[in-house]
Length: 260
Ligand SMILES: NC(=O)c1ccc[n+]([C@@H]2O[C@H](COP(=O)([O-])OP(=O)(O)OC[C@H]3O[C@@H](n4cnc5c(N)ncnc54)[C@H](O)[C@@H]3O)[C@@H](O)[C@H]2O)c1
Image (cartoon, rainbow, N blue to C red; front, side, top):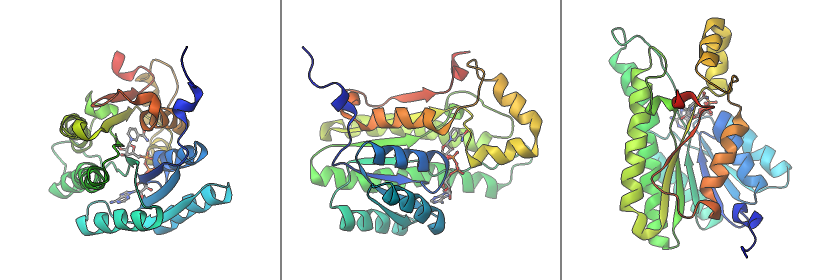
């Protein structure tokens, strides 16, 4: 007879760092982890947004701190991890969700657009993975690292996204490498790859160009856009004891987008 299966998803007593948690998917995951019992370090470049998320969690009876950090800056990443450890003593879970898009047709894309997207979406994830990974190795109790990828790491996604898709393909490859390197430390490294999901990131794009919404919907066999909660469930699973034998995986939360 199996033991307590419901308990496999419980995160009571765990400490999670979530980057980009001032908005969208990061915010939803921070709130979801809190509901599952974890204390959360809410990291964002926007201090008011981080504070709002942390205040919401604390007001609901959870435990959260807000930490301002630009994920592209190694000294700020080190300080954010140190601040979290000062407050909570340990880190069990990292979700690296901070990311942006900056579209342009490939022939028009500037070097600045390429560099900015790569540095936030890929270098920023690497810096957090490395810094939190160092802590997890030193602590010797394993851990979970979840990197926010996109269907753009697997398929060409939409026109004008060469920088974005390159950054997400990089995340998928890096996730597999870290999973192998850190398996001996029981640090499980996975990624989540959502399709078009209704967050501030794409809401504005759809408002500005209604035809984009039609295009997005046409990509998704389930016939609807993703909602934040559609990514929160996979993030809870990957952080929990239910995923104890899952590492190096890119979990597609995409309504069938990439199955086509
Ligand atoms: N929404 C989607 O359709 C979708 C689909 C696939 C993947 N994603 C990925 O999910 C992640 C989150 O996207 P979202 O939709 O929640 O976007 P969002 O714009 O709602 O949230 C992104 C957050 O990241 C923060 N951020 C931006 N640059 C930062 C930096 N340099 N340092 C620290 N924080 C920074 C922003 O302030 C914001 O709070 C991104 O990596 C994105 O690529 C989103």
